[in-house]
Length: 117
Image 1 (cartoon, rainbow, N blue to C red):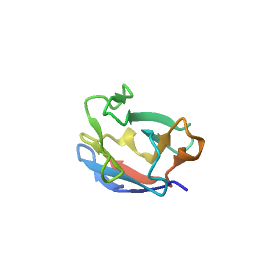
Image 2 (spheres, one colour; image 1 turned 90 degrees about the horizontal axis):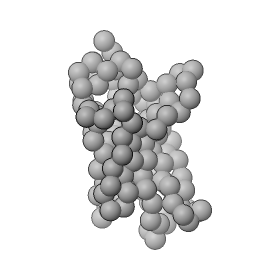
Image 3 (cartoon, rainbow, N blue to C red; image 1 turned 45 degrees about the vertical axis):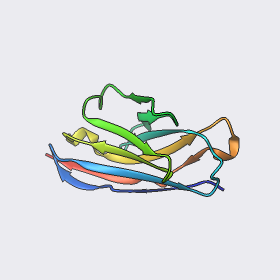
Image 4 (spheres, rainbow, N blue to C red; image 1 turned 90 degrees about the vertical axis):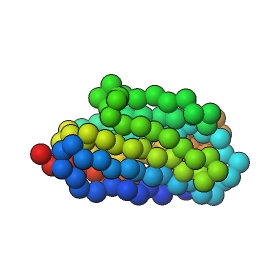
């Protein structure tokens, strides 16, 4: 089955940067939109960004201009470059594949991002 492994989270000070990675393995035939979500303690999971297989991107207003999503289809890996981080960006970040093929839909395990002021 398709598996997603996230990495790159950590702790930074406000204004710093982090790059998250989400590597997919398993079903190599899968075609999907890669989406990033985040969830802060006590809050609902929220959409952050997405990128289609042909590179079309979308961002939440709260991160637009600071975050950049990309993907390397040859490596089956997506990235979320996060710059100018703010304390309110602190959350668990998840990647998710969204596909018309049911078996290609999957959530990553999450990676923690903590931004201190």
